[in-house]
Image 1 (cartoon, rainbow, N blue to C red):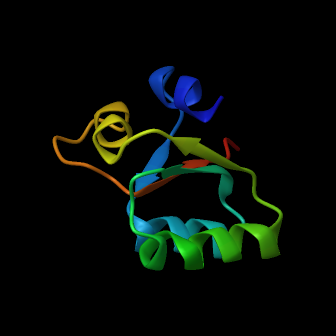
Image 2: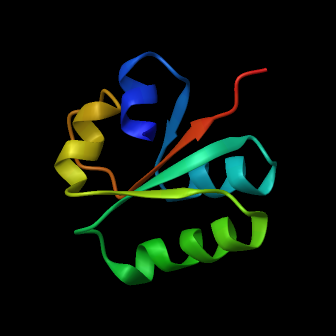
Length: 84
């Protein structure tokens, strides 16, 4: 669901720190986490999503997530931002 939103131009932030900031500030509509990312990296993001009731979608690979977000490297986490 969120992958399609990003492909259709929804605003997105990429990376653990930026995603955590967006979630904490209630700016994230949803979060995408790569299945092949290390759990110690993604675990805190998952916990924050659960605490803030932000839906999480799993993407198969970091490479796929990075490509979808328009970067040339893999991404472990990305957050789709709410539109105002």
